[in-house]
Length: 212
Image (cartoon, rainbow, N blue to C red; front, side):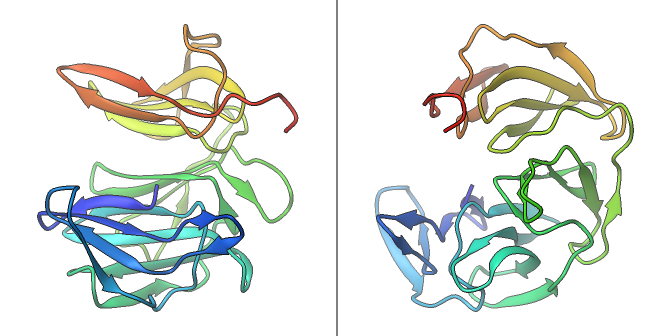
């Protein structure tokens, strides 16, 4: 996701449409009226990167850029305008289609499609976006990209992904438990999960055909 709420605003950056990659930065206080804060961000235009908010800062993590390909860089900002590089080459492999959340005083990245040509099933964590620790072990979830990660009822849930409809959960990011291998919703990627009225809601996504 390339949008986040931070400092009372919704922030949007990057993306891809009809052969064009974007690197503008936009903000909105109400989701209706938008202001272009930066016409040219200090980081490359990119596709399927991730934004998260952690310790009062907004961070942009990895993604694909037309200039250099797969990235594993991390950028941070306190105001959305002035960005600094936290790590120009983090320990995890360059990737896109991953998920990043802030949980339990850590930034956590999971899965994605890496520059080795495979979908990953690794988990990495960082306290500041600079130094990263590999949390992957034998009990991790299956390889995936374009999944969704969300914290709910004292667990971190991994939901679906590229042509998947399974659900995994963890209390610590180390040991993962398969909640179901075949949820009620159909296999899909690029869906969104949100918390509302003490429930998890899954919204939309792309079905396509397996192998696409």
